[in-house]
Structures are given as C-alpha cells and as structure tokens.
Image (cartoon, one colour):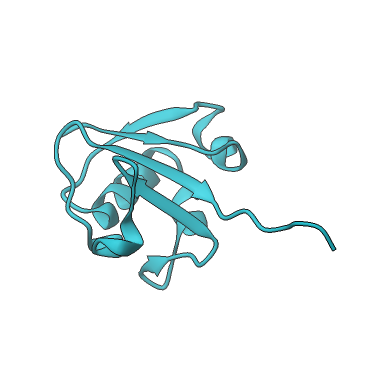
Length: 92
C-alpha cells in the first residue's frame, strides 16, 4: 500500500530535500514508523510519547487527523498525508 507523504521544508533535511516521499502502513502510527526506517529522525519530529506533537498538524486527504482518530487514523492505498508545522504569530 503506497501513501504519499508531503514533507514541510523544515523536515526535508530528513528526506534529502524531497518534498514528498512514499510510505506504507495501515495507520498513521505505522506510516510514521515506516518512514523512520528510511528517513532516520523524522518520526521524533512528528510524534512524542505515542501522540502527534502539539505543534505539528497532519492532514489525511486535506482533513485534520485530530478530528479523526489522531495517530490511529486508518489509511488506504493512494491516500495523501500532509505534515505541516503549526504557525504562530501576528502583530504585537
């Protein structure tokens, strides 16, 4: 099962500069573990203590996984996963 994972600029050091990589897994948790086997260090930047990091947003086919099943969200062949760092800021 092939899942396309879009990688934000800040994490591309783990993917040799690639904007998108492919991974496998029945859930997001399995997908991130699979990515870790080829892109060492990336999983720790996304997951902390078995949960998504607070300042990392993950979307499955444009839907925020926090409103689905989080890291246990089920995946299907051909799905697209987008990882985005949360953005903060504004005018003071």
